[in-house]
Image (cartoon, rainbow, N blue to C red; front, side, top):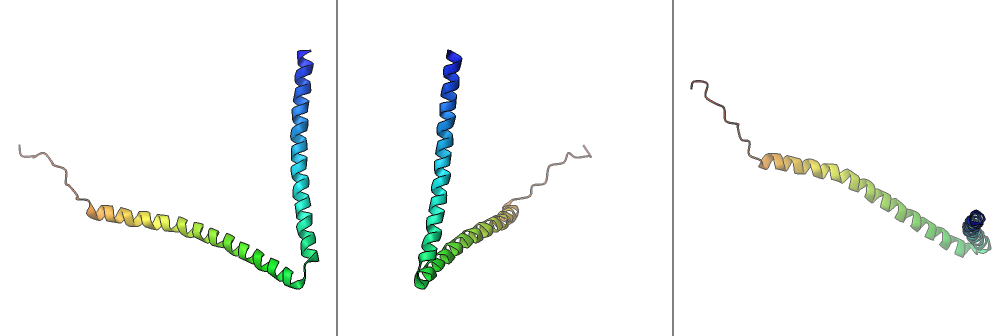
Length: 102
């Protein structure tokens, strides 16, 4: 009976995971429907406030993208400046050559 018990436990675990996933999807769908219903029921003033909030969220997202882009562009420039300063500060030492006359 060990095999049957193992299969039974396996299917119980899988069923619990499937139920959790279904609950998550159902909850997300219900939240989405509730939000859409609130938008439909909103007065024009409330709808304008919702749109302003959405625009502010979009601006924040765009600002984060802009900062990432500028950060990635600034890094190569900083590395190039650092390399130039290291080269300028480094002393060039000529290797000693053995005398050909000796």
